[in-house]
Length: 291
Image (cartoon, rainbow, N blue to C red; front, side):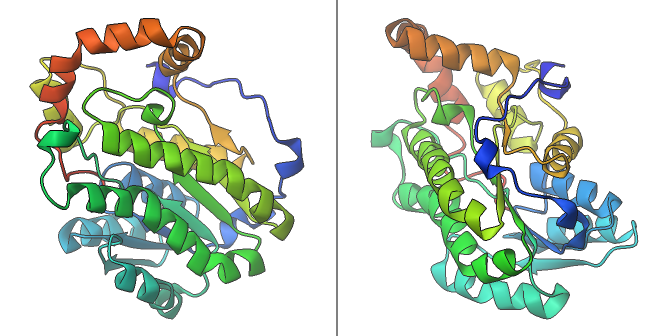
C-alpha cells in the first residue's frame, strides 16, 4: 500500500534540525488517544517504553487503549476531556503533570471531520470543528511550552491533504487544517531556537468506523484505507528519526502538485464529483478522531 511504503524525504528546513536524543524521556500527551491514529501512536510509543497520557471525549476507548499500552510495562493514564472546551484545556496540563510528570512529547491527534456544504451545517458545527482542529492544538501547545522547552521536547501536528487541496463539502474541515498547516510552519521559527522539534504529518485516509462509513456513503466500500496501528507506527518512526515533515502519500502529492500547476483542471474534476463528496460527508458533521 502506497501509504505505508518508505518515502524519500528532503529536509526543507535544515536550520530546524533538533537533536532528538530525548525521544525516550517522555511522557507523551496524546489527544484523540482512544481510537484511530491516536491509539496507534499510543501503542507505538508504549512499545518504546514511553509513558502515555491519553485524552479524549469517551472514557471507554481511552481506558481500553491505556490497558493495551500498560501491557508493555509503561505508565498509561486515561484522562477523559473535551479539548474543544477552553476551560478543560486550561486544566489539562496540571492533570497530566500530576499523573506522569512534565510533558515531553505532545501529539495532537484529535480531530473533527466536519463535513457538509456550509448552508447545510447544523448550529455549533463550525465552532466545534475549529475548536478541535485548530484552536485546541495551538492552545495546548502554548500551555505546555514550559514543559516542552525545559525538556527539549517534541510536538506532532496532524495536517491533512485538504490543507493542500480543499474538497467539495468540506469548507470548514479544509479551513481548519489549512490554518493548522500555516500555524505549524510559522511555529517552527519560534520553537526551534528553544530546542523544541515540530513534526507535521499528512496521514493517509485511515480505517476507522467513521471513514468506512464515509467510503460506503460515497459508493466506495472497497476504498483502500490504511490501518491505524501501521500509521501510528510510521508517525513515531518519523519522530524517532528526526524528521520535521511526514508528507502525503504519493497519490495525494500528485493531486497537490496538479492543483498547484492547474487548479482549474483539478477544480473541474472535483466539481464533477460534488454529489459524491456531499454523500461522503453528510453523516459526519461533528464526528472524528476526537475521542
